[in-house]
Amino acid sequence: MSDTDLEDLPGVGSKTAEKLRDAGYDGLMSIATMSAADLSEVADLGNKTANKIIQAAREELDLGFQKGSDKMAERENMSKITLSSTKFDDLLDGGVETQSITEFYGEFGSAKTQCALQLAVNAQLPEEEGGLDQGVIFIDTEDTFIPERVEQMAEAKNMDPDDVLDNIFVARAYNSDHQILLGDKAQDIMKDNDIGLIVVDSLTSQFRSDYVGRGQLADRQQKLNEHMHTLQRLANTHNAAVVVTNQVMSNPGQLFGDPTSAIGGHIVGHASAFRIYLRKSKKNKRIARLVDCPYLPEGEAVFQVTENGIEDA
Image 1 (cartoon, helix red, strand yellow):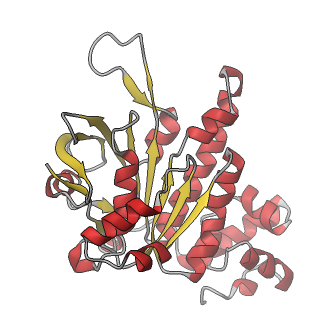
Image 2: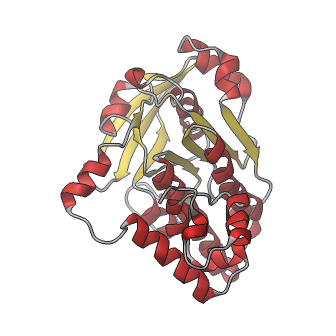
């Protein structure tokens, strides 16, 4: 069955298939990785029918158990994006990888956005130069996407700045619901364009603004969880890298060590395969600490931010 044969799934007629395609769900993998609640809402179906459709898509794609060796073979399709710093790349075993969510968090001025913009440029480099040779989706929640800065970074890589900017799809998110919607709309762009990287800068600022106080914490975390699952689904379906930046808060009760911690709690922590804590050092130097990764040890790398972008210190 091809990716476009949605009508062959039980319970999917021509009208339902049209609704799914209009919403950007035109392949079996995108259907198989949906929740029944999401499918019910998108296609105006009952829960029982939605579950039946999802199960059929999963059976068609054989999404049950597999051998570890088969999973290893899937990982061979994974690619990495350079951060333009040898030590930073070494810390991440080659760079930011596709099929995963990578979180950069730190205080104001710690170079979170600089890393995000550098990756948006570097993703367009040829594969032999540490890129993906693919386009980028950039969800901007704090008006941090500065085209002039992208031009500087592109020129430093001997890339055409106009071409680089043309290959970045930017959207400004004005509240958390709009941000979630843009995450869903990213599917439409990825359907029609060769996209290898999705950036959300920053992930939690709109959620913090819209959900204030402990009474709304559960609702905030639920929405944030939904958003993170959407991003992970896009990463898996399109073999894309997802990079999110995140704000921090201070824990005054912590007596030893660095009292700062990332916003979003366990929801963001568990969804991010790589968690990188950025902090300022002397002058234009920054320190990146790999806090969490399923297969890499903790460690640190020193890099600097210059007019050209991210570089070795």
